[in-house]
Length: 441
View 1 (cartoon, one colour):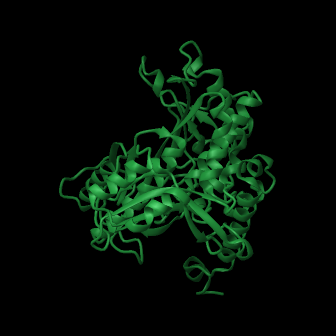
View 2: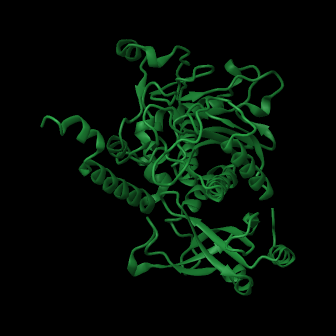
């Protein structure tokens, strides 16, 4: 990672960079940015870049619109292709008020604020998300480019070729890639990034989506991170693997404990299970997200945990002996449409609530929950995730934990935005309704 202003300026000049994108994220997770020239960047690295935040979703009211983007030097990267014939670099920024205080509407600040709770303990929160997406032939409607399935591979397949280009671009930007493969649905892919400290990974997730889309467009494809773009096929998830470390020791591992899960890991997992309904609006923030969270398409619906049980909300991967650093939990409900900064902040906050409150982890469920009767689920006290954006809003509105995690500004603005989205969806007359009712009503 670049650590000094002098390093950044040297690399810019040695590499012939003409423009630098100063990136940040709105509350919905959309990447925003300001492009500045080489002649301006030296001053900006010292004082930041002023901008009007009044038109950024979830940022400020028009009467208090002045904000400052402060580049994080550690995030400097050169984009490995020319943009409009110009070599371009990018950096993520922290957003501040004119008085140099952190801006409370900045999702990156929200994550850093939650991380400060574990920094004092010397803990590190690692995250490894699995971001799934689709390649389509155009941006107007989801037309498939292949009929492949899980782990299918073809050297001549366009999706495979574009995925390889994407991996080379990511690695060229210093983002380590572990693996890639075709997912279950036709035209669906997954590139797995090597796990990182959560703030770094949130930045990486934003770069990942940017690079996937840009490389696809260069090859006349459209890459979509929409949770459920095709009826009757699996949707795209963002399964999140998580662990806590201290001094290179995995705090989730205990060789003598059941499932080798330490007390901290069990309490953390219990916290996620206890609060997941409250944070579902953050992890699954779109109307379309709830078309994915239905029985029959491998996405979780019910709140439970297990080891080999992929119908569980949280899975604890089984590992060979001697892999203590790989002990982790996997939350399977998030989708790639979520804001990674807010998502990681919510997950960590819920896990810490479990640790601080010494929550008791219920017994694992190793049966297929999807085939259980309602009576069986009730007997085992298996609850369900919210089944619509409307219900997710109602649950989060009652959550003190999520208000405390996000702060009043982001909490209130996110809920207000999602109420508008739900109301717009509620008023929409869909193709389904025309097909279903128009012929006879």
